[in-house]
Image (cartoon, rainbow, N blue to C red; front, side):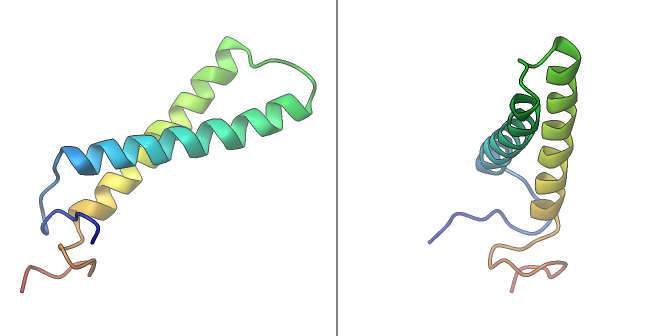
Length: 78
């Protein structure tokens, strides 16, 4: 069974999983578009990728903060 933190709480696993998902998704999606254009990413494009990753991480952590340990959103623990 997958680890899930309790409603209203976050732990290190939440942060680690969120960071991995955010980084992989934003880098893969962005690099695909940039490399299709035939160029390597510029520093400005890397900053854009980092902003997308940060936004994805915040979204993931917010979702986990308001989800209980059984995966139900906006419901306290049984």
